Length: 464
Image 1 (cartoon, rainbow, N blue to C red):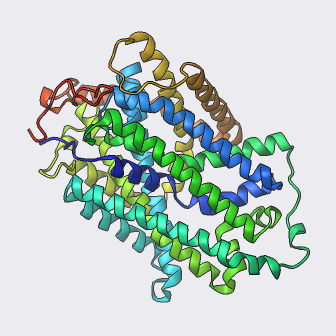
Image 2 (image 1 turned 180 degrees about the horizontal axis):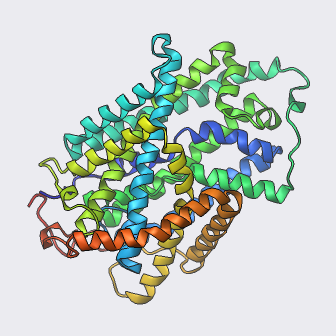
Image 3 (image 1 turned 45 degrees about the vertical axis):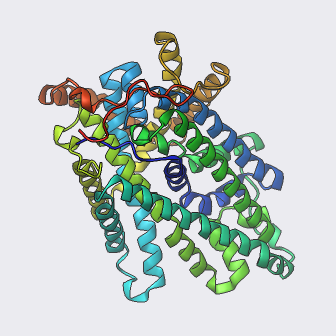
């Protein structure tokens, strides 16, 4: 069996939105407000984040349509720079995505536990149950997994839309009864305006991350040449609109200085509107909004492990696919690792270390655009990055700057990341000795990229 090319633009939009919008938009405004206490700067940094993400979409959409294979950035790193680069990017992407599954699930578990007194001490159990339920659901078939992603992402969008509407409908009364000195409760920023804007931009760009979701399913899309750009650009515009509306809604209820330093700005806003019930409202939003991210992370992590294993630098057993097109062993392994992270509580440490590679992976992918344009100028590219090399160069430069900033701000975890990089080569060599290096049969190879007019150069069977 092989992966089925049965997914469409709706799924692409759903997985990008589901993977991007998480708890960050409910928390990050407080971090931004602590650095930028002028409303136009507070909103402006979210526009800058969207523009940065737009440049990233522009560059990676070219790679996704040129190389429509499962695994996203792993595929581009391996194709441009060889097996070792692919090994590092692929395995770290898989592990960090499993850790993200655990992190998102624990937030869901904590929210449910807070709402149900009888389950107040069962947050971890609830988080593990979330992973098990979604893993079991996704095992059925790709079609079921796609539909689950679409439905959960719809719930997320509705939950946020209702919350935004509530801010505008009831926020006026909250502002009217606000104490006169509320705007003076926050301490003044301790950094310069420039440094504060850079730090805020870093936080915002992390919140925008997730737009690459459709790339993990390139060979499962019916028409990747058209659907990848449409999904990624469409999802980014939708996410940017939601983020700006959320922040405008927050500003309508509270001034920037009142949100400064809040660890959960959404809860502060909800409390201003609904009083003591505000926390309950935010918990409900979380419970409705975050399952789509769990669904997306499980789907994506399984495709990375499948892709790595198919190319001979992972366990061959992980290439097994059921009749419904689901890479079953890869999905089960992803769910199991997420459960281990939850049981041991180590997911936060893994994500902290992986933050270094999060930025590095994008830098490698943007660099791959340059390498492949030069090395394979005549390769089919259904979508070509607009404004290359200037736009790609700009986002590459930004990624390198963010990488250097990550090293400076979190030296300890960055050193751990570099240590992992050092020991990864012996692990790569060991894996290559134990696993056949050749790619499996031609029937497992992805179909040829789509031409600009949507025609395929070959038409593979859906199931071998």
